[in-house]
Length: 481
Ligand SMILES: Nc1ncnc2c1ncn2[C@@H]1O[C@H](COP(=O)(O)OP(=O)(O)OP(=O)(O)O)[C@@H](O)[C@H]1O
Image (cartoon, rainbow, N blue to C red; front, side, top):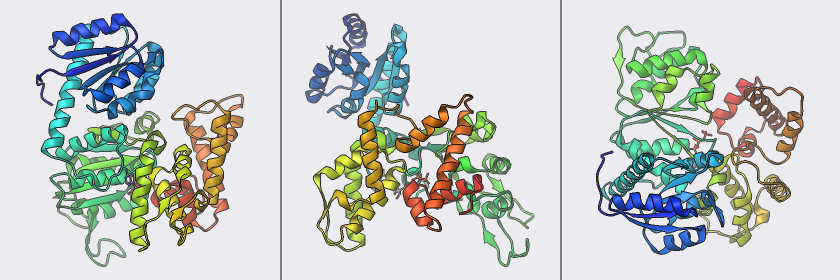
């Protein structure tokens, strides 16, 4: 990104500390920008409704509320400004979370003048760069639904990713759209006319890796009755998508690293080496940094795959998108089943918004489809058309939310599971988090496969897992499907 100077920008400071406002205002004016201060959230929001701001400095502890809770509304206001959070030491965790939700930066008070100036310049550069890009070369995001600020931040990264040839790592819980985003990057890139090749890393074993990735020639081994092209040559001039890279056995990671470094391969049974010019996108729902620290993922492979990295937000953190996603799915279903469009009863969305959606968009779409089918010829979908198991867990989760203080945003579970975990956590010696997570995951899968014996389809629907991820987990925990 070039460091350009821009005509006068319009900057808003929302902070109840008059001294902070004056310091920032004098800086802003020295840079020949225009500045306004508001000392409460309410007065700041009122200004944002009618005036186009390019940048907002936002305090966290304001007299009428926590500034972070208004981040979304601020980013959605008319000027779609960048936001720099001003925070005290005690709010740093929340501020870090805000960065994931689309804030540009956070500054811990007291902050140096240099730091404020640098952050402001970078945010304004980015703001104008983004606007230029949007007008010059719009992205095709036809298949992706969502206008929440979190999603808009992801679209900006998609734009960067599509214009570059850098390796990309997409993080996100199951069903958040990692594959959809990977395809969208490919479709918007210079490689769009070539193949998008999906490699299911969960199924790559040591014995399969070479033949799957590189292909083989006839007679290379028993059963090789014809030549077979591997996935790496298929991806030549296109994109290689490594799905669920966190499930890749450590023994296989070294071979993969070599291919990624050299971009060359030799089909099994061939003597010649070939090269393949592919662009790499990897996806995972696991924290590869933690895995690398624990020795479960190669550090060198991690460096290799994450030149650009972004994290897709879970649905529960962008409930504002649920309505559009539901409408999109209903429209798709009425075309698929050739039925009249169905409307949704008014309290339907409220219930959907209050649920935690562990399986994210995939789970939401499955639930909508089940409700659509259950509604039969009815023109309206009512709450009673939602799957009973989901209604029970939604009701339970609603009740518990009312009874308990709100859990931390990234608390992994809720409801009865959380209670069971609470009991386990009462033990004298705590296990490592990894051991605890693994044990809980195993118990969940054992219960799931016990309840829905022989019904993989149902297991996938309930858990919100993809088929390959489900089987990878069964393999990991040695559970018979
Ligand atoms: N923002 C979105 N707009 C429209 N559809 C979406 C969106 N996000 C996800 N989906 C849909 O949800 C389903 C799951 O998406 P996808 O397979 O890309 O998720 P994933 O993160 O790769 O899941 P997993 O980790 O389990 O493989 C797909 O049908 C996809 O089209």
